[in-house]
Image (cartoon, rainbow over all chains, first blue to last red; front, side, top):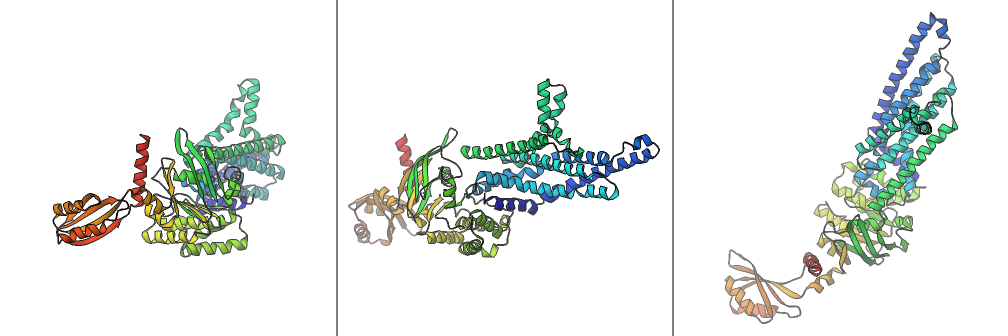
Length: 256
Length: 316
């Protein structure tokens, strides 16, 4: 696994040498900032109304009113933005032919896949860390509970990691970055909304569908609930996608 | 050093190479010659463990390319066709990355990077981004990364393609300089290049090996007649007639007449029969001017064309 670090460093570097990382981060933070502002402003508006209605004031809660919608929205933004980070992982190397050199160095395929996945995860972690500004502002001006904030970030981290794993798989299947992005976006969307049909699907099927949904498992984190069932789901999802990525690379070797 | 046994590779129904076998001794430079699409790159990709063969085996330094792929890859330096490199890195960063991935120690890394940059003449572009380099420099960077880690075997897929004549000479010199210490397989479709740098040549066409020998042997083996080029100042029809009358001469072919009544002919005779003296005497007897007389060898080009057409006839 000694080849993990050089590849990880090279990948991370290439995100920041090109404008990709900066553009994606700026867009993400801009939209996140907008969502934070609007949910905060809305909470404010309700707050003023509550001054004349004490019954309403009892239900006012800054975690529920500002942070939960914010986290939910961040998850949706990731859905759009993550394919842009992951699309180049393998597709670019295949297009440029550099994969031929990479795979003829003394490197295990697994090390290459994990290094690329981790580099993208690192970019995402930096991006996510920058959004901490919003909860910090909230802590300065109000008294939100810290537990749900942390749990929300754990959830976002796992959700993002699962997105990256799926994106890596899509990228390993093609040498065209646009195709990789379209595929990962499509599959993410399907895994996102698959739970919606659980209400009218046959009973056993419905439970299966809602269990498969990436959204369903994210729901409890911003409430402050870290459920092992959800963590295991995300880890499973990641391992499965990365395993398929590895297989995809191998099968391309056989097919030439 | 390199043993290849009955290697075959098919892409679906298309057979890229079939039954390719050869051996390369330690320290030898082997030329891999063939037209585009003959299977040169496929063979090299199999040897570098980029893809497995459909059938057959190969061993490099005693290690099987399929079972001990990592061991094999530690011992080879590879320059793929068109030298694909990470364009978003400066030269020196790329070399650092490669040195690290090949597992060199920190101290060894710096020493070897300096060494290969000097050998390949890329010291003056070391801080430039690879994407901004010209084709020639890129090719040299590719060679430099292959040399890192001091591999025993070098596999070079068309290493001089896209270079200007001066750079081609430099690279050839560099490759020749490595002869003896490293075992090298070099592919090319440029024949003089192979005959200049390689001790042995494999000619491959449509996935099959059609000849393996030294460049000299290949030309003499296929040469069934010896040929002379002669330039004579005199009237064309008479010159041809007179030359044809010389004993031992089989055919006379007129190659061209220039303005000042100078005829150029190619005279063919039996392989072991030297007709030079008789031909010269015949010209002088007629009081024509003998301007040039020299033997013509088969070029590798002709050898190649002959082998390929011979093969077609056999198949038909």
